[in-house]
Structures are given as C-alpha cells and as structure tokens.
Image (cartoon, rainbow, N blue to C red; front, side, top):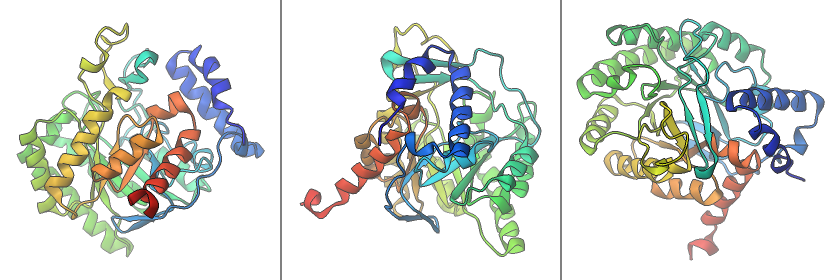
Length: 348
C-alpha cells in the first residue's frame, strides 16, 4: 500500500502550522467517510498489551492535543492506533492563546506550541464522543480553564471528570502544559497530594455509581528536578494513581538553540524532546517499580524511538509531533519494531 504522506507533506508545510493541522484533520475525515483511508495508512497488526486493567490491541497510541474536541475520532480510529487520547478539554469553551501559536522547526523535526487549551468545552466533547462510531480504547485528557485560579483548580478537574467518566476508557489529568499560566505549579508535592486525593475520591465514587472503575492517569512535565520527580512518585504510590504519562512538552530550548523559531514561547516537542522524556520514563520506572504503568511520549519519530521508551520502562507509547514529520506510516513502523524487538531471535 502506497504511503501518500511524503507527497502531501510539502503541500502541508507550505501552509502555516495551524492551518495545516486543520486541513489534515479535514482530509482524514473525508478519507474515512469515502472509504479512502486505506490509501493513507495500513492498519497496524495486533500486538496486544494490557495496562491499568485495559487491553490495548497494540501499544502505540495518539497523544492528546491533535483532536481536542473528539471531532475526528472515526478518522483517527482507522489509522491503526492501539488507543486514541483526545483533549485537553476544559469545563467551559475557551479560544486559547492568540495566533500564531503553533510553529514547525523542520531542521530539528520539532514543534513549538502555545495553544493554551483551546477547545469547545467538555459538553461539546462528550456529544462528539457519543456521536462517534469509534469503539477502541479512548483516553480523555482534562484540564482547567485559564481564568480558574489554582486554589479552585480541583473544581474544574472534578467538573470534567464527572462529565467524561462514562464515556472514557481512561482519564488523563493534565497539570503539565506550559501554556496555561501557573498550571505546572499543581505538580508541587503538597499541592499535588491534596489535588490527587480529591480526584481519587471522586474516581472511586464515580466508579461505584457506574459499576465500572475507569483508570485515571497523571501527565507530568519533562522539566522537573530529581527531587520533584521523587515527590511525584511518592504521591502516585500513596494515592494509588493508575498510571503516569511521561512527558508533556518542554520549555527548554538548549536542543534547538540558533533555530529561527527557538525564541517562540510555548512547549517544545518532537526530536529534541526524545532523550529527556525517555530519561524521565526510566527514572519514574525506577521510582515506581512495577506498581504504576507508564505511558512514554515525546520525540518518537521512528520505530526504534518507540522501542527505546518501552525498554526504559513504558508499557505504552504515544505519538503526535512525529506524525507531522513522518505521517501515519509511523504508527505501523512503531508497532512492527516493537514486535521485532520482542521476538525470541532478537532477544537471543
């Protein structure tokens, strides 16, 4: 099956990054409705994985941010992902930060974004999920509105948690985006402990009411000091959090110094994040042992990158920026490289 993305990429890169983002999603929707999806990407073969009580058909998922409002689930579900995560969603709609707010750094296979949780609000996301025919594992990533002070942040997360609970395979609590002022302060140990305990109580209450317990994951930043990671691990273990996603984007620019876009504010993702995010995966695995599954995300642009994250201790991986540079073929490449590295002949 031909991979058309190398032919389309120059056209997409001729557009500004956010317009290309919208155009790509529109094209995927058209392809899904018209039966042309098979010309975009081959469905990945089965490579089942079980993590935090869920069975995934393969360990390669879509990270949050690509489909903030769950408007494109049917199309994304046809690309071969083992799971799809949508959001970040907030209680009320918000427009996010002023444009331009998304930038490509092609020389570094990187992206800088300062989108700012732009989304149509949690009720719109829930309606889109209900109208979708997607039946794979669905993660829903929740956040707080920009104008909600941190001392009231838990209220926003509880609001979203209660509304998405029945519709999610798992819920991700995003307190690590650099694009909502003060959000990362919620990762401070004492604040995080109170915050997570509140959400865990709600998670168990909602599970009892629904007769089905849904896993809750925490997404953390890559820019934390070792002592801060120690504290987060202690909170995760003490509170019984189901999983952790390592990592969000970085505010560090050392890897892209000198690039014309390096001075843009926002979170940096793509190739420059790979080593840092994988190191966080490895460190958190050492801290958590086998008790808390890890999802590794950041800088995956090839199958070997995905396999390295699993070697570092991740149970699952997620893609986003790599899709901008490699296209949907990256999904199957990651699945097949993970499979190859798991084969007995390779291990020998």
